[in-house]
Image 1 (cartoon, rainbow, N blue to C red):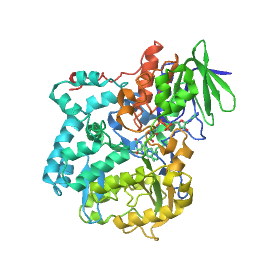
Image 2: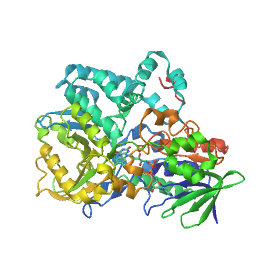
Image 3: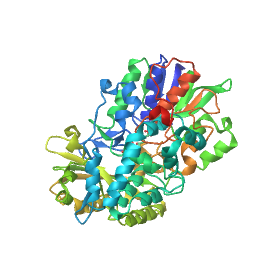
Length: 530
Ligand SMILES: Cc1cc2nc3c(=O)[nH]c(=O)nc-3n(C[C@H](O)[C@H](O)[C@H](O)COP(=O)(O)OP(=O)(O)OC[C@H]3O[C@@H](n4cnc5c(N)ncnc54)[C@H](O)[C@@H]3O)c2cc1C
């Protein structure tokens, strides 16, 4: 039996982040990956045509400038770089108008003011409070295991704390409606919420300040999303660890009542003398460790885990020219924007779209966001070519049956190109060299962690957020099974931030009495981050 100090299940970026930090503590760590390629949701493939690189899942790397993993692990030295375009978002409308958000908040406010002066002022206030004054505090909440709400309130305190916590009981839509009046501005923020796959339920209002804390910090990974896991793998290998592909874990075995290693699907056993950490979703992690290791309430919670009704269908294009939007006449910066959002004319349509997806219907009016990455980083496409993608929201079980996606794929791709052309008229047969749809079913097929095409490994709703994610007994990265930890998006949440991996590494290092080679972010408290 191969033996390691620690084993991490799953080589998505969270598993790799956890292993990279602990490898650099001097532990011999193995990361086991079921698929032939590492990366999970950080994946890049030549999906449409040879030489045209498509990020199959995560594309927008949010907030990296200030994230500890980039600095601590010196990712740039290990080959991971990213760009942060100045023009961040443009939502374009069929009447040729647009709203454009820049890294410079004054320019964003000026764009919003063309539709509503009042909304421009509201934007300025929210940006100042959450992207400037409280952003470090919000970040510190992400990079520490979650706290119960009372502890959060205590640590924030003051009027700013009260203002922030006032969002907590709201739905995301009511939080947006409370601040913005113009239907197009509301549509923009509601489509952001759709992209984050927030459920529109009471208890999700805090996503608005959270969105503001990072919404103009979108980075594009140079050369593809896969470059992040590749850089993390280099760090692990350089520290004497291993990253094993094609190693699907079936179960965690125990010795003396503690986690002591794993059994692969082919029956091979690998031993871990100090810890086993799972980066898989909560139900899979609990199943692998054995339900008898957890109290009944945990088993019940994960058995009824809600994957959410949101998934995404991605239309990938190989092009001879970048999409040129009609709305560039209204605002030339549309043509420079990294994130492009279109499909809805007002927020009522966004709500209607969600209703259809919840009912398992192909949306009558597809809407969502996307990008032309090669416009910002030419290495995404061969000379003279471009790649672009668009992510309209879609149900997993189409008309009640996910298998239907295979039957409708081709026709749906054609239809979606037609919708995109309404906004970017140059997307004709002359420009589009290839168009291919990647469906919610394909997401699940490519990554067994993304059950039902889940973007975040569990719905974002009150009983699956904060300490409730996945359950108060597991949200601190430790579990009731000694030696078994979680570093999964089903804790904290999904997104290419590495927070679950980082937080788990800190907890494991603490439990094992390892000296930290990195300086942890100060604990969440307004005073510490003022
Ligand atoms: C279409 C789409 C678009 C997205 N866009 C963005 C975006 O723009 N920005 C953003 O921040 N986030 C985005 N996300 C979310 C993001 O991709 C995920 O939150 C992130 O990849 C999760 O990382 P992870 O390491 O927690 O899990 P994963 O990336 O899922 O990694 C888990 C790994 O475990 C492996 N595995 C599964 N089962 C086993 C097993 N039994 N044994 C061994 N290995 C196993 C999987 O193959 C996988 O490699 C998007 C997701 C989707 C689906």
